Each structure stands twice: as C-alpha cells, then as structure tokens.
Amino acid sequence: MGDETRAAGAARHVILLTGDKGVGKSTVCQQLAARARAAGYAVTGVLSPPEVAPDGGKVGIWVEDARTGARRRLAVATHLRRGLPVETTHWSFNEAVLQWGAEVIAQATPCDLLLIDELGPLELERGAGWTAAFDVLCGGDYRWAVVVVRPSLCAPLRHRLAGLTLETVHVTDANRDALPGAFGSRLWGA
Image (cartoon, rainbow, N blue to C red):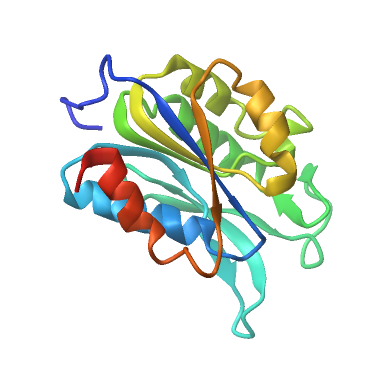
C-alpha cells in the first residue's frame, strides 16, 4: 500500500465477477491488477491463481497477496489429499494459509483497487475462510473492488453486501480477453 492512494473519501464501486468454472475469472483479475499497477494505482487484496497439472487439470489453488506478490499454496484437490480440517466437496484447504489470506484482506485498505478472488462456499455457506472481506468491502476505504464469486453464490453475496453499489459482470470465453482493458477504462480512464 502506498502512502498516498486515491481511495480516501471516494465512492465505492463493487464489481462481482462471475462466470463458469475455468472460464478465466482469476486471469482477468491478474491482468487487471497488472494494468492498475502500471497506471500507478494502489492494488491490494488476494488473487487465487490455479495450480494446473501437466494434463491441464486443476489440482490446487494458490493465494497471492496482490500488494506484495507473496504467494502460498491455499488448497489441493480433495481427491489428492483428504483429512484436512477445512474441506469442501472439491478442495482441502491449508488452515494457516486461509488465516494468512484473511490477514492480507483485513489489512488491504486503503487502496485504489481491492481484489478478492474469491468469496465462495467457505465464506457464504459456512461463515469461515475470508469472512474478513465482508467488513473490508462494507468499510469502503477503496475506490473500486472486484470480487470473484461463482454464479450460484451471487444472490447470497448480494444479500451480504446489501447497501453497496454492486454490478455483476459475467466472464465468458468471448469477453475474457477484453475485460481487463474495459475495466481499466472505466475504473481510471486508462
């Protein structure tokens, strides 16, 4: 976080970035972060790039601090490793890394662009994981926020963030490559 950000006192705009599994939501976030940094904006939050096996299958999830680039392995596919304290149908999560990500989110503001990739079943159905994001998003000490959420969880997230101005953008194969530039034009006129 820079000493000076353009977020202080600015209106809050939250984009819910959604789309089918594997369509490239995390990639859109990574490219948007790179463009924002290049334009001199303070970018914070968490990115969750996939860990992909040589055969192209997703076998894990990393979490990356959008401000520093520090990265840790967040989860592995449950078919590869079971028995961790925090599991969903598809993923076994590292509790220490979940906590680290929550701390990154809790300390993410003030900023120009806040990225939360992603709020999912842990947060919206179990009240676990990165629930710190709800307070940070509602606190509003950012100019723009982009939150990745799967389509089936958009309604619960909208309910949880009632009172904020929310816009839903669906990532598709057809628009994925153009979205970072389109967001950049809207977010900071670049």
